[in-house]
Length: 410
Image (cartoon, rainbow, N blue to C red; front, top):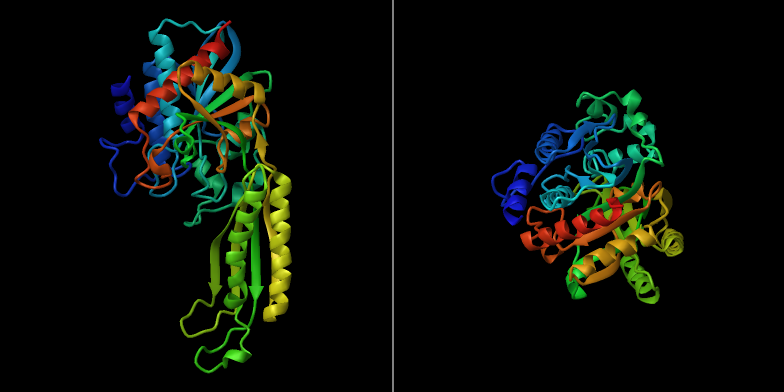
């Protein structure tokens, strides 16, 4: 199995070696993503699965059982720019490996099994994530069609460049009766598993974000001629907010049973000229926790701090809420079965929450869903050095095979 895993992960990543200093770039609905998905099709068909592509560009590799009800597993193959080769790909690899294992052992499914390769999971191209799985779950907002990437290509244009028709994308939705459960495997993108002496993580919930845009208006002026006491510097005014967000998030996280993280992650300074005082600043803030009340409390505290900074620095500050998505709690019964399956194989688990979004959060809106994490070395992700060992990938295959055997058996 390890040799098959090594060969297949390279094939899915379109390389002969996983050591790629510049990483991997397969943006959603790009030629590179499509090429990797064609490898998925070839591998799945070599395992005797029947592959179809839906109206949103997702691929489904099906192993027909005695019933048409589906137990589904899978992930995605698109990446961020210059990202790693395991984010998403590990879930695809282990899902296909689990099917291979079950076939090699003569298993015959009662319920049908499908391995899905979702399209465009990452937000790297359009700033919109999980387009494929939102389509499957019937929760895609079609108004995103006009959103463009940095080259001016719209979502609609990108989708249709892959021989799809945007006007029929809603037909990718699957019925509630069709799918019994969905299980996603993913690299952790952190170090909680190893920090707690476990081998795999079992995820209770996905911490969807509140995202704020803070707009600060001061007054631009000449850096050499405007006295310090007569300035209205927008960047100086917003600077205390950066440390406030970090310190308040750490305080809330210590005091709460559920962790919270918050980050001032973007700054846009205008006019952004060396000899001009910044007259306008936009700051982007990302707040995450599975405790939605705690997220909103953090948001309220940020707004309060902005009102205080307005008065202290004589600037105008407006706070806009860009995103306020409720966090997703995964199915407790299915999660317990997945946890039990892994532990029955001798692998200790760690129960945790996911600070990153995944396709599973959309599937959970409609079907019982679970998410299992395997380690990635040093928690590095979205980086060329992202890596999961063949030992951990093999464990992922074993866990998924055991889960599929239980879920798709009589």
